[in-house]
Amino acid sequence: MKIRISIALFFLIQVCFAQTSEQASIIPQPNYVSFTGGAFALSDTTIIVAGENVFEANYLKNYLKENYGIEVIIDSHYPPFKNFISFLSILSSNPSELDPEYYDLKITKKGVTIKSNAAAGSFYAVQSLIQLLPLEKSRRLLVPCLQVFDAPRYKWRGMHLDCSRHFFTKEEVKKYIDYLAMYKMNTFHWHLTDDQGWRIEIKKYPLLTQVSSQRKETIIGKPVDSRGKPLKDVKYDNTPYGGFYSQDDIREIVAYAGKQHITIVPEIEMPGHSLAALAAYPQYSCTGGPFETYTTWGVSDDVYCAGNDSAYAFLENILTEVMDLFPGQYIHIGGDECPKVRWEKCPKCQQRIKDEKLKDEHQLQSYFITRIEKFINSKGRKIIGWDEILEGGLAPNASVMSWRGTQGGIAAAKQEHYVVMSPGKPCYFDHYQVKDRTNEPIAIGGFNPVDSVYNYDPAPKSLEPFEQKYILGAQGNVWTEYIVDFRHLEYMSMPRMAALSEALWTKPENKDYKKFIARLKIHSKLLDRMNVNYAKHVITQN
Ligand code: TNX
Image (tube, rainbow, N blue to C red; front, side, top):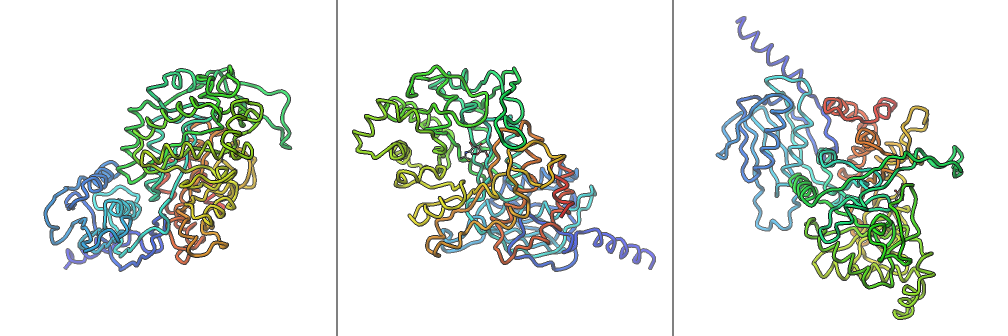
């Protein structure tokens, strides 16, 4: 009798320690979840039946080992009667109609069953399962019984990172990718070139790494006073700064992201934001240089010469190597903030305007992008560019990333071009996240609090339903003029990345800001365990 009572008590206590529906926190919130009561106990004796999802099964196995010291067994046989985590494929006569990101997660006292159409869905089920695990280390992990049916609202759930203004190491980039994976993001937009540094090895042009990846010093602080007026006496740190990713590094990162179902969209800026490249190869500018990689922020007037055929050949050779490294369908060609002052005075550019019967320098920019697009399309890939590529006419197959508000995106969708929304408000995570800036690390300006990110809806009301389908999704941009290291990057992106993931994954009718904050408070303990430098007061203030 005594033994029976203590066994009953033992199980009662264990069930009490499992997360309840109020305590369970999955971010982004699944589109359907129902807690069914009780808990599954995961332990050393649990068997994972991997099916076709060998990577996902091993990912879970490694996670359990690293975080809890629990060593589960992977077996390829049928699931045992109890104590299993089993991956199953949904069999359908028409699999092409099924969403590869869909998953079905069922947890009963006997075991965990994950069903999906493809490995991506299984991976997302694993991410949900991981977030349901208790934080405390234990030999038996109690996971609440539930049923989840889940699929994302948008196909493009992205985060961007500027590695030009400040460089992040291969390991740091991988860590950032891990955060994207945790939130079921599937696109990493990697900003690899700009006026202030070129970060990708191109075998044909070794000076890009020898010269363009370096700058002799960097401006200190913000070169404006508290009213935004430019300072007269600008200071530099007198310290060389640089870094780049070798092609081996890039291949490693692409493979690493790919396994976690994240596509990398590389960005090679043109025709503007190109001073670092021109510092090494000034012959592709209008004036011939000489130039130095920018040591200050802002935009250089010196850009690629749009009248010089050899500048196009230079870029096409670069893009050929880029396309060999990045297997995704999209190549980002920049296209933003290209000053036209050099083109206005350049005989070659003016000749090109005449020869091509263009109206002005805006149309010359359009000619430039269309010419590059033709090349990229000829290799079976697509271009995406910042919304300035609308000016002077959109290249025929281009997709648009709308950053100066949503107007560019709306205009592009009306022209039946695909769009990724990334309006400065609220998708720029280099902006401040709280009103009181006294204790905040330096930021570029602006104010994008976590609730504005959470409540962002990428679907513009002014678009008709058939136009809405051109909105692929949205992404958060992290420009790094003032973000000097990885801890600072974590601070700026977390928890806004979590909020954005829910804005992109969860259908509007399943979203609730108050509940999100409640889940974020639970989730923040996981971030603590991971030693992430997220903006804590943003969560506690809410
Ligand atoms: C604008 S967004 C830029 C970047 C800056 C950023 C700072 C875009 C296409 N261009 O070059 O880093 O603002 O917020």
